[in-house]
Length: 446
Ligand code: IFM
Image 1: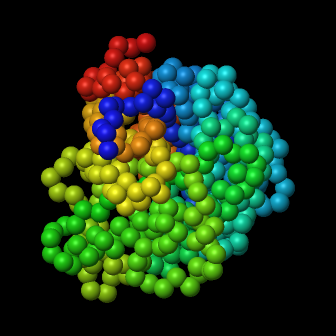
Image 2: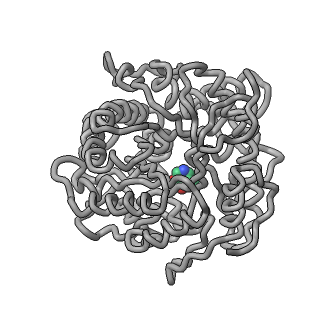
Image 3: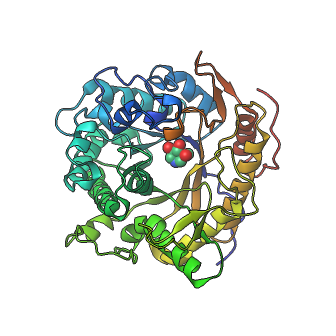
């Protein structure tokens, strides 16, 4: 294949956020309760008892936030739609005020020349659906498709890219297998039906979105490549089991119509489900943060792997290993694994948390190296068409509350003042140069 030089002129440079992490206003305008509202109320679940009742108050401050995105010269904004705002019970009646909010937001993006890339489900499941079994219940997949149709019927004329689910792996693993995210269930391998039902919901939603006139559809999967702790066969087998359970489980059914070897039977998979899940998509969204070290499990462990450190590399403020080249390798591996079945890729999340500082050279270095890894993959022929920094703003980082700071823009949670960091200016300059100018230095303040 002929090498391609750098990013295309229409490359989608963007930023990403999610509803629960920034909106606040959890009790306003008829919004229903989500699993994360419930989880935040359970003692000991969230660091220092933080909750997202106010978060970044984006529900009221969205015009200022869209101005910040426009100020970057970005082309696209990836945000999420809160299912409990649109359908407070997760099924049945629509809350008009909830849908109106996203209608205004999408119009606000168009006024600023920004493409809208909404995610339909970024973890805030309506609590009534969880009470009926959540993603363990196959019926949730059908409810998701109905909700997708409701939203698309209203917004499809102005949405550039629909993203069905955000990181179904995290919902399965952290929400239902390990119990550290909502809804806090620790089912270990018993959580596998939640992966299948999310994927089924994705497939059903693809069809509902197309019927409602959606132009382009994606899913945002995170890829956390396993790095075996050693060359011992046990560690290599554990790394393969990790990759199958946490990475390929979420792309093989969509792009190949089969599950990888998960090591256990899947009695919840019914005839025809895999055909539904394998409905063609237009873009594969890849969220990438870091690899993970993986070693053989100890005797009697519930899982076929144990997670360990990645030795000898720097870490972010969250302690996540910084390995930009692993992103390049993820992209090359995707191309190798799926060949012609791989649609164009967009990096739907890439970013890091560090301290509160406004002169965030660590973040600039991180982003510069990861954009460089994407550039290298593009030059090796991988079709990557977008890159969204996680995140525009500091926000509610799930079980870690407000402690981690992921924003290009600092948020003072007392005053809600937004202050662009050095990384904001760096990203603005990078976008302005079409992705050519990186070099790890921030430009001058606006
Ligand atoms: O904040 C999250 C986001 O909601 C999903 N992807 C990873 C981010 C950082 O942890």
